[in-house]
Each structure stands twice: as structure tokens, then as C-alpha cells.
Image 1 (cartoon, rainbow, N blue to C red):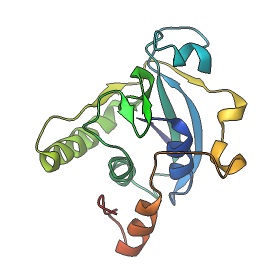
Image 2: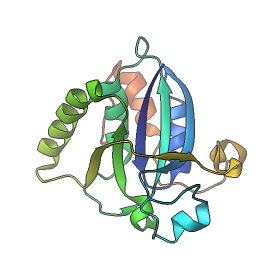
Image 3: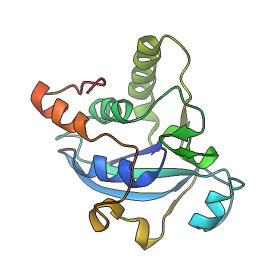
Length: 173
């Protein structure tokens, strides 16, 4: 299994979305790249810890590529928005892709370049090595499965578009 970390606003929807992508074995909501030890939702929500709500995605590279995961990611976030996704705002809701294996960097750089070219301007998405990750509290794990009427900024139609296209998700879906 390989790991990738995606920050895309509130982690409830990002977690639920990636859990449905074929080839993804496991997702975990958490807090990445901040400065506090053992952060809690309350401390991260204060905006003073430097953490971003992030989802760890464990995947089988023989079943789904990192490139495909990044394509999905760009289909569910606004990559130009600074510290905001949907109705959520604050530095903890910034967008970012964090990696643990330097071998992933060329793939990620290439994907970021393609997305920036498509957008026609610099992205607000961080691309950095993972420096820390703490799992979020249990009630945040699989939140939308436990609370199906919970609100979320993520549009799940990208999964349908991906399946229908036989590969690449349609960002406009």
C-alpha cells in the first residue's frame, strides 16, 4: 500500500469521496503539517496551530495510480481558493497535497502544472512533504457514513463521471 495526503477543506467530504474510489483501501481524517502536539478539532479550528484538515489515503498502486487520485482531488476542490472551500473558511481549510515518498514528487509536480495551465493562474494548493499527521477524533472518522444528512462542499458526481468516462474524471461534472 502507498499513502497520499489531501487537504481540501472540511475533511468529512474528502474522506467520504476518496473512500469510494476503486483501489483506495482506507481513508483517515486528520490534521496535517501543523506545529502543536496532539491537536484537537477545537485547537485546529482556532486557526493558530498551522494544521490543515487532511485525509490520509492508503491505496493499492496496482489498482489506482497516484495520478488518478490527484485528478479526483482536483475535481472536488477549488484550487484557486485561499483558505476556503465551500462554506468553510480559515487556514485549517486550505488546500494541499502532502507526500511521504520523494518518488511521488515528479507525478505531483506534473499534475499541479497541468491544473495550473488549465486554470490559467497560480494555484492556491500547497505541495509539500508531510511533516506531521494526527488522526482526528473518532466522531470525525467516516462522518458522512454515520451522518448521511451532514453537510459537505464535495460534489460526488465526479465519481460517476469518472466511471462513465472509463478513467479521467470530468472536472466540470
